Length: 464
Image (tube, rainbow, N blue to C red; front, side, top):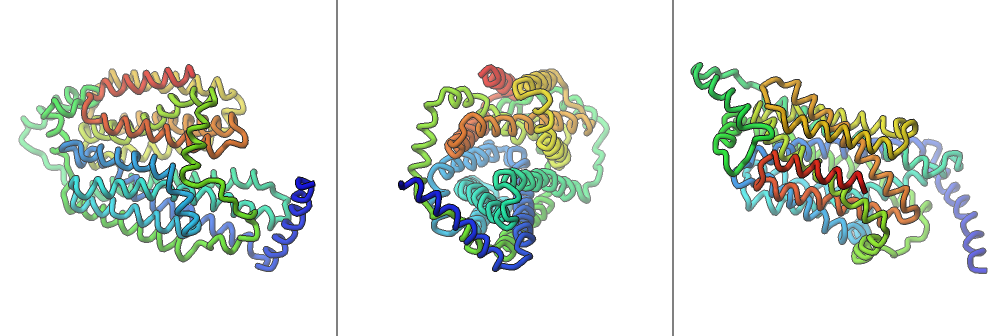
């Protein structure tokens, strides 16, 4: 009889919830939309600063590869925080304040750019990771619950799961725009007031010869002193960097304040929530994640998931440094990465439609071949000082990345119905592992080897 009883309880809660929402007034649906918009824009502003800063790390702080290690720290602590922190923090603070507090946890990392050293960057990188876990979790929870509230407000004319997909994709668009904006700002600020300093004729010719020899696939940090100097030659002024850091810090503060003031706490929608069950504590997440490795499909997904982390780390740390910063100068990293953000957003928008026509298997195969061709091209290409070529390469990489992300994410959702939490937590775990491996190894291997490595992992992953 117990099962029956819960069924009967489920019916009135809906009408009770509806009543409660109607009490809030006819504008409630708009209020929910406003919450999502404010949240999305806050995330956009916040990650504008984060991506804008991160893309420059490996090139700006390339002595002792401090930048790459900082990024490795971020993703390493992100693994830990994903496994242990979210449930604790959200239980303590609620979704809204978790988001605010996590935003604040990102700030020291930006502030550390004023005085970059191991002592400032590494701890602040760890702080970013620990803030990141709860942040994403809180965002997902918030969107899911508010979608449920919206569904009830429409008297269930719109299904919750449909809304969740809609809200998430809306949110994803905001997030993608952050890549674009962050890089746009960094490019504008760093190239602002840059005078074309023409040195003695001889040195100009000499440096252009250097570019094709030392940049691109031939770039090797520890060995080539001239590769290092090629980057240092084009280093922006300290005051430009400080201005950029100041702008980014202001972005983060603005994001935190807008969430604190503009987003309603979920208490407002607590009639929607089923009685909270404490099934997932920190250790639990770890247990579910590891238990989930028992599925043979999950094991086959590991290489390709790690590959996503690896290729993202490559484009963030290695491509920006060995191709763009070395060939064009640090201020152009922003310029090149803008096209990555745009292509990524385009790919994310188009993937569902293409999947419909091609089917998932074929699309993954096509993407693999496309990406492989791109990598081979990068291995053979000698960098020049023509901007648009860099943009095209990055745009292609962005397209491929967008397809990979969505395909593998949705695979995780489709293959394990009802076990989404474990599947996604695995996805994040292995993706972050891939990133950490790549960032840590960044300084030890020449770019040529790294490209081959990316190619190898991708082929293994696709076969899986």
